Amino acid sequence: MTPIFIIGDTADCTLEKLIRGCLSRTYNVTYIKGSEYSVQGCGYELVCFDCCTPVICGAENSVVIAKKDAVIPEDLPHDCTTVFCPENERQLCAVRKSGVLALDCGFSPRSTVSFSGSSENRLVITLNRTMTALSGREIQPLEFPVERYGADPYSLMCFTALRLLLDDFDSELGRLI
Image 1 (cartoon, rainbow, N blue to C red):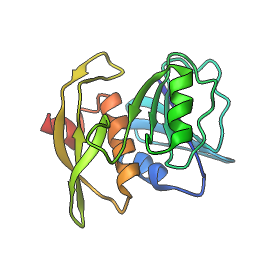
Image 2: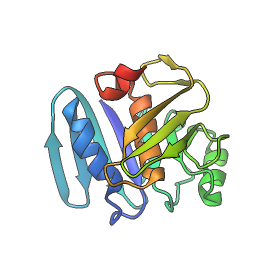
Image 3: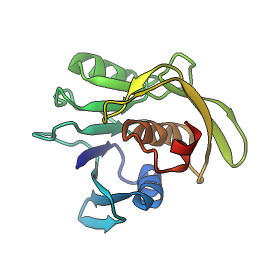
């Protein structure tokens, strides 16, 4: 099981729609948001907590995804991986202070995950440097198109970073690598 904390404005449902709509095809996704609790799909279990400001205790090998305007808690677990927006100074400072493994998703080619092109229906996501998935597998830099699903570029970059972290090779992404 992998715990995933999605932090930020709970009215922003973009990541929720991507996770529930796409990942539930290949994973057992438990999604908890406010008083809502849902389980979809089958396979490896992902437990997603969608909240404004979580207190994270005892969640080993978790993933924290910060929505673009989220405030990242300063007391993140030392073994979590944080996906964040380097253009948000507060997020950048919190990640630096915490010392956790971080994947930045930004609009600069210096970011770990960025994008190099877009059209009305697709975005070309770029992994700019080698990263290690939660499975331990190293993923080399690559570039690939993803469907927009009506999502903004930052949310799509975060979602793609999550899929890379999960070593999501039963999906269309896996067939490209």
